[in-house]
Length: 334
Image (tube, rainbow, N blue to C red; front, side):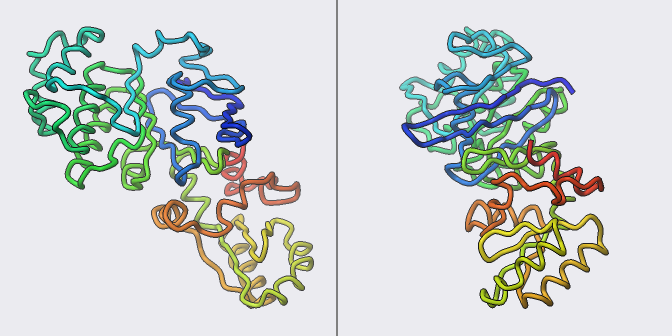
């Protein structure tokens, strides 16, 4: 599939701290891709690099297969970008913002175009209001419509529904789905999991500046069905059994006082789960529900769930098997 955005080994540092650690991913044309991860994972930094708002330290970014450099700006004519913050300081009226945009992006002609009035009606925007007097949520809606006026081929949205109530989030979802129907590309960063599940065809999961998953939403769910996380109830017993269990089940991955594994089918999953539980008297969690697992990652942190992907999985593990489930694993870490 053709790529709207390609990122290869992108690195961004802040002093000695690595914000983006050699990340590589693709955003496919005509699809909606969710960019997700906990706070501080590097999502907004990556997006700012894509928009050339900050300089990368190394790596390559390709927009429609054309390499981006510090002087690149023409590609932005086909891009719409809604940043995480409402960073527009404008004392005039909403219609003045729209007029300014239409001067540079004349797709809709002028402010009297009925399509613009339709957008304002959908999002409950009064063009005669002054922008500075709007609430955070109404500013958000106004800036989103302003990006739609550009008729972008690719729309990059950084937390677009942040600060909106449920009814207005639904309006955003409907608008983005209509863009998808027109063949537009959407790259969406969000903590709102209903946005991701309702809108996105693919997801990219980032944590501590590393891409740890990129694939379709359905493949992620399939992977989660057979993934279990074991906790030690008796840490001494758990430690004593560690070597034996890893020898017997080489696809186990150990981190601190926990194990994770993903079985190739229901039988192997059940057998391994019973064996580990019998040997260690540990308790386990089935990571099967997309919504709940991401909520835990974002809000509370599911101990170890992210950690199991932060290091290269050794040869002999499930990642190197040839079964269907583990083909999903191969695509998680690239």
